[in-house]
Amino acid sequence: MRLIAQNTITNPVLPDTLGTGADLGSGGGGLILAKLIATVWQALIVVGGLATLLWMIYGAFTWIVAGGDKERLDNARQRITNAIIGMAILFATIAFVNFLGPAIGFDLLKINLPSFTTSPITNQSNQSTTHIPGGGR
Image 1: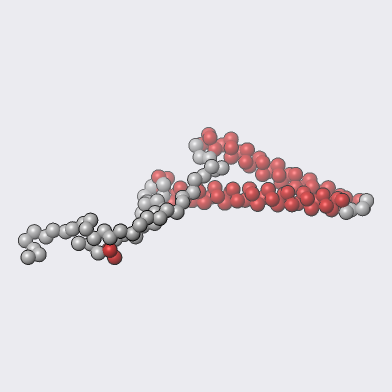
Image 2: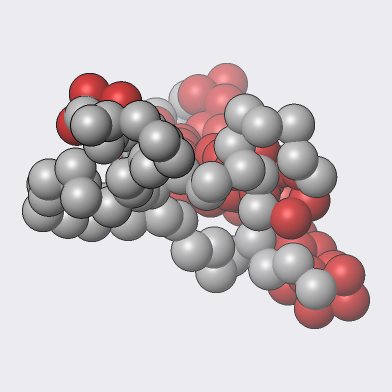
């Protein structure tokens, strides 16, 4: 007879092989690390896009309020140019991933993260019974 306290505690979100030393490429820690890297990369693309957009708006505002001052106009033009270069670099990385992803079979832009599921707690005391021959009289 197994007591409830003797049952193994598992996390339904994480794969069963996590922490067991199993092959990391078959759904263990390697897959989790790949998903983490992909998620961080996607977040950096979004933050970078917002930063370049705000930098371009700041450059445009500086251009508008420059009032004909050549130095301020040059600074505003440089900000706008830097924002355009940053946006081009972001688009180039997205294009690179879209091109390389299908070639290697791993798409960073469409990653499926594990989701939380709930399962009812059941009493598993009748699942495994140990019979000792000649004992338990």
